[in-house]
Image 1 (tube, rainbow, N blue to C red):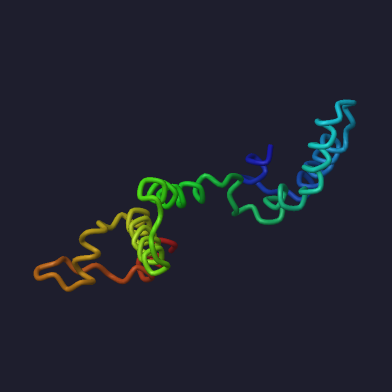
Image 2 (image 1 turned 90 degrees about the vertical axis):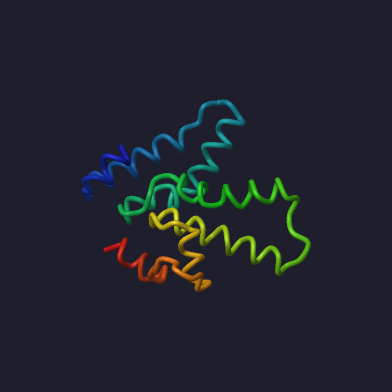
Amino acid sequence: DLKAWQRNPDPKRARALRARFDRIFTRLTGNVMLDRLLTRLHRQKASLLRVLERPEIPLHTNGSENDIRAFVTKRKISGGTVSEAGRIARDTMIGLMKTCAKLGVSFYQFLGCRFAVPKARHIPWLPDLVIAAQA
């Protein structure tokens, strides 16, 4: 229902969804663990129903989780970095690689352009590409 509302926002329907949320998450089941969980979720109502105020936000965090997955995998394989400078360099490169991938730009061509490799293809600055992609 939240996905349907997100596609076609309607203030009346938003009130109904909030009331439905309250009905579901204030119910007492008699099961102590389940009642605690329902209470905890009800306390998070504002963040769980934020889409009713801002329909443009995603209903899931899959994009964010995908963004950090490469960082976690690299850290697990390499055992981390020895220095803070190494961590910053690793995180910067992975961030640039992810941004290039999202923009459809070859990371290696991007590096070639930035390091002035002879005959390297010109790649515009990433902030310009991000702005162009959002337009």
